[in-house]
Image 1 (cartoon, rainbow, N blue to C red):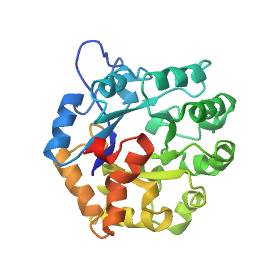
Image 2 (image 1 turned 90 degrees about the vertical axis):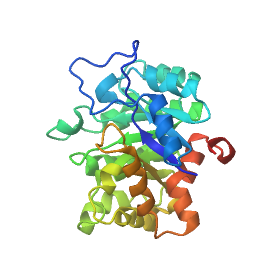
Image 3 (image 1 turned 180 degrees about the vertical axis):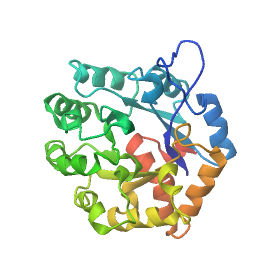
Image 4 (image 1 turned 30 degrees about the horizontal axis):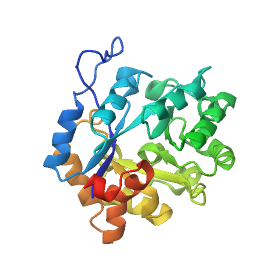
Amino acid sequence: MLIDAHAHLVTDEPGYPHLPGASPNALMPVERLLEALRDNGADAAIAVQRAHVYGFDNSYVLDAAARHPDRVRAMCVIDGQAPDAVGTVHRLAERGAVAIRLTAPGGDQHGGPAGTGWFAGPEARAVWAAAADTGLSMCLHIYRWNSAEVLRGLPAVLDAVPGVPVVLDHIAAVDVTGPPAGAEPLLALTDHEQVHVKITTLNLARFDDPARPVDWSVARFGASRVLWGSDVTQTRGEYAGMVATARRAVAGLSAADATAVLGGTAARLYGLRPATAG
């Protein structure tokens, strides 16, 4: 089983307008993604809202998942500090979302600390509680400039919602094979069993040997807390190459651990039973 846990869908289909000025690298409507999954021996995908293209309008990932419930699940991006954020979580859950993703205001172009209110302030804490109530997982999109600040502020939130699975995208923007001190805030979370790390093409492409970040993550978090995603349309490249790189990255793992990283962890987190995904 192979599940792409991080596929960004982008369509030019009428009814799903892009944000003014948005310029996506590529189009990936759900039908094209399904073809890519089939052609590369993959079973299913998590459609992650492309906030740079659609903002907080999650209509396309939700509709794509509703059209293909056996193959696609929707991860939705919201503003955790919005006045009706809790109501938004409940509405998204009713429409079939499996996860909520939060990201720091300002994105990767931000020049300095944004604080922790976007994921740990009072309004955002209520979002985590709503996720617990609705059975959704949480996902944090972290950048290099705020990684340490976020990771150090996360344990207090986790302690309040111990049953909510949490996924840190792109290995929390930590250079996992760099100086040990740089990974300390991430390693401090290894004892929090609800924390998972997602490794994407963005991470793997930085290494001549893509197994390095995978081996590092599995050794510290365990394969059952590590998952892979392509980051297609955000990271440039052909889908076939992304899948091939992922398979190379797990080649040194045991069969069980490789299966977990490439699909088993995502299947458990997002409700894709092996019989369904296959």
